[in-house]
Structures are given as C-alpha cells and as structure tokens.
Amino acid sequence: MDQPVPIARPLRERLTIPVLASGGILMAVMQTVVVPLLPDLPRLTGASAATVSWMVTATLLSGAVLTPVLGRAGDMYGKRRVLTASLALMTVGSVLCALSSDIGVLIAARALQGAAASVVPLSISILRDELPPERRGSAVALMSSTVGIGAALGLPLAALVVQYADWHTMFWLTSALGAFGVTAVWWAIKESPVREPGRFDVLGALGLAAGLVCLLLAVSQGGQWGWGSPRIIGLFGSAVLVLVLWWRQQLRAERPLVDLRLVTRPRVGLSHVAALLTGFAFYANSLVTAQLVQAPKATGYGLQLSIVATGLCLLPGGVTMLLFSPVSARISAARGPRITLALGAAVIACGYAVRIADSRELWMIVLGATVVATGTTLAYSALPTLILRAVPAGQTASANGVNVLMRTIGQAVSSAAVAAVLVHHSSPVGGVPVPTLHGYLLAFAAAGAVALAACAAALSIPGDAPAAESTRPAGTGTAQDRDGALEEA
Image (cartoon, rainbow, N blue to C red; front, top):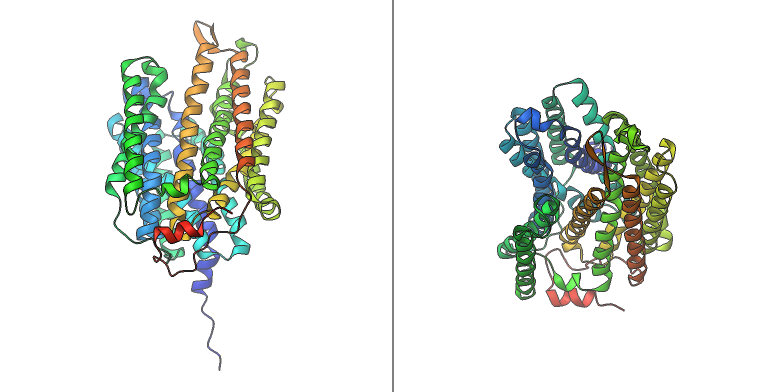
C-alpha cells in the first residue's frame, strides 16, 4: 500500500515566494512609516528638526553599509540565517521605537532597522537557489518590486495611524508584523546548500563601512551643513581616500568582501551604473510628488492635500508595480533583461515628461507618478536578473547587495539634488519659503535626463548570456576557475 504523501514540505515550498515577498514589502513599509511623523517629531520628542532628520539618515547609512556586508555573510554562512537575523534586527528596532520617545533611542532604533535593506538581495539569492529556472524570472521580478509596493502601502498606512491614534501604535503594529515575518521565514524557507567558504573579510567590511559613511553623510547633510563647509569637504575627501585604499585591499584579499574582478566586468559593472542612475530617477518621483500635492493653494499650483490623501496619490503606483512585475519577467524571458532595463528607464523618462506637461491637475500628477512607477518596476525587476546571469551562484547575495547599494547611493544623491533645486527655486508664501512650480519642473527634467542616461547604460551592457550557474559542488573552485567561467565572449 502506498504511503501517504506528506503535505508539510510541499506547503512550505509553495509559501517560499509569498513569504519572501512579504518580507520585502515589510522592509519597505518599515522604512516609509516614519515619513508622516517627521513634521511632528520635534514637538513629540523635544528635539530639533535637524536632529529628528537623523531618523531617516541613520536608516540610510546603516542600510548602505550593512547590505553588501550581510549579502556576503549570507553567501558564506547561510542565506536564511542572515535573512532571519536582518528581519529580527528590524523588528527589535521597531519595538524600541514603540517603547521610547527619546530621540537618541529612536535614532539608534532606526539604525537597527537599516539592516533590513539586505532582505531583497538575500531573498533573490534564495530564489535562485531554490526555484527552477521557469519560475525564477517572475519570482525575482516580484521580489524586486516589493520595494515600491511597500513604500506605496506604508505612507497612507502610517498617515492614518498618525492622524487617528498615538504615534507609538504605528511601531507596535510594525513590530507585530516583523515578528510574524521572522517566524514565517524561519518556518517556510529552507536553508540553501550553496555556500562560498572561507574567512569573512573583516578589514574589507570595516573599510567599506567607513568609506560609505563618509560619502553618504556628506551627500545627505550637505544641504544643512553647507556644501562648501570644512566638514563636508573633509567627509568627501575622507571618502575618496578610504575607498581608494579599500579598493586596493580588496584586490589583494584572498576572499574579498566584494569581488572586484566581477564588478569591473562590463556586464556587472554597467548593471551597477544603471542601478545607481535608476535609483536617482525613481526616488525623485516620491520626493517631489509628496511635496507638490501638499503645497498651499496660495502658490497657484498646490493642492494642499493632507498626508493621508498624499499617500493615496502614490498608491496607484504601488498597485501598478505589483501588476507589472510578471510583465517584466515575460519581457526579460523573451528579449533579455538588458532590454527590459532600457525599456523601464525610457518609461521613467516618459513619466517625467508627463509631469512636466502638467503638474497642476491631480489626475495628471497621479498619471505621471504611476508611469514612473511602471518604468521603475521594469527596471528594478531586470537588474537582479542581469546580476544572476553574470555571477556564480555562490556570490549571488553579495553581488545583488552591491547592486542594491548602488541604488541606495543613487537615492541619496537624488534626495540631495532635488532638495538643492527646490531650495534654490523658492519664493515666500505667507512668510514661509515654498518651492516654485519652476523648481519642481527642473527637478522632473533632471530626473528624466538621468533616466535617459540609465537607458543608455542599459543598452551598453553586453548581450545577455545564460546564467552563470556553477557545475561544481557548493564551495569548491578557485577564483581563477570562477573568472574563467565568466570570461566575456
């Protein structure tokens, strides 16, 4: 008599994609929920507005530093283990925010939450290891889109909580969701056998952390401290010096944190350049849309919407990202991911053309923002697929971590550039300086031009090749073997 077929394992396998995608959405929600609080936090915490802004800066800095580090740790010590730890740190940070009103504790907690930035590259690496090729493309596309989906959901959710409940309630809610996410990952995701053995490059991790902190701190605080101030100039100079020394150390390291042999190959390096440019173009949409629709009606263009209504304006973009992720996978399967990336960047540029054509009518604003979100879906879904096809299986998480890092740097530069443009093009309304419509249009034009540059970078990537899957057992093969497997045709 045949034995009954067990159902527990197949059920866990069926839940792999939903659980990982929910983790990515939760990460994006966690990063977004603090935005509606920023105007009120000085009053709620007794801190200055400049100090409160560190609740965003701390998450940016820690996420940028930890994403490539945790990606490499996942390749070496187990992706599920590191993914669970990342979600756990995010949840602990949320609990600390829920328990305290002290600005120092809140900033430290938000820095802990930055560890969750590694969720997407780690999850993509797990999908590569666990899914058959025919399911991998759509799953990776969905995973990449979770960043935009979560951000679109997080803003109106947080705005509703802030408007109708105590602000700590929001962090208790995200703490509960985080605890559920940790449990779901630990139960539903099995540990990947694909490993990259060796000693962790501690010196490389410290060098990269120091260089990125100097760079991103200068970029994010330049507007407040003054771009020509000694602090900013010193930070930029320190970043260049540290990163040059780090680059030399990585080339000499036996097991480097970042395999620069891969980064310097056109297929990988140009993908990282496109990620940086796409991150810049995408982030300007969220920044400018939120400010534009909340501007006072006295400006002549503002709609003076509430923060809840503002969040709802961005919601169609999140829904579009969810719907278009399988479309992106189909385009990549038929034409290759570099074509999908180029198409996505071109669509982003078209979205900004819509924004420039009319930024007074609400329906046109929502339409333009949604077109940009659609292009972002295509581009962000194609980027990890390009990386998957160009690196060995044992370096998937670290390589995608670097790609996400480049997006983060692009977003930081976008934030600084947009802020500089809007501050320079402001006029007083009721005694308060408010950006002019011309300033917003210049920001749209800059983001659209960067999107076209991303399109050009995508088209410059060498033709798609089959995924660089290793035929050796996990953890075997020298660096020379891997280089040989990845030689350009």
